[in-house]
Image (cartoon, rainbow, N blue to C red; front, side, top):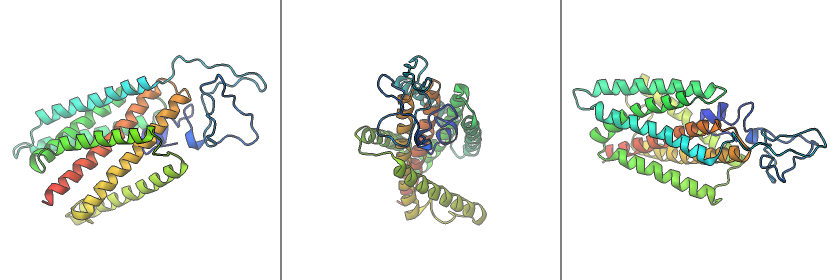
Length: 296
């Protein structure tokens, strides 16, 4: 199954030698993959996915147990995610402290933040289209994205809504924990129908935001009003909910990648994808808090 993240939907575990998820179906009439003693064989009860990492011998020969070395584990994903998020948090804190947003410096600080965001976007796209994970690219993306988040958070917190940055962090952590608990408890069923619904909703959301941005750029003001007032609050909540849905897709992708014996390097892609989703949720919370404060 592919998630919203470009790292997952374009290259991630869906690469040529990666996890195919719901994008690969068993061939009709093909030989069944033995599961006993083979942790990388196709899971029973999943008619949509087959294991691209399964080591199959000649037809009729007993399956050989695959090597367990060099395979991605949950510890790998946690460590890489912590490294990526840690880099982002450190650079965000430095940007907050070193790039003031008072009247004399806000233009310079905001300009640096926007420049960092553009560089981070380019790095994200480069990594997304690479066939292998590049830790240097991923950590560089996190560093530049952190600068942007630090500047934007400081502007909102100091000039629009005091305390908004910490509230957005708490909200993001709460969403992450809630989705993880719901996913592990089986309350969220990540299947083909769930994927289709989330992707359709995301496409509509992104298209509406792009139209609103175009009207704001060429028409001035708040565009169609999708990011201000009552409509802004509504779309902010929708954005957070979409981010939560994408977290569930990311959890499913990571879980299946581990079960299918994805290479260890895929842990960097998992960390990258999860970071993208968490940044999305944080920005939606921050924007929602700014709108709520401006309506007071």
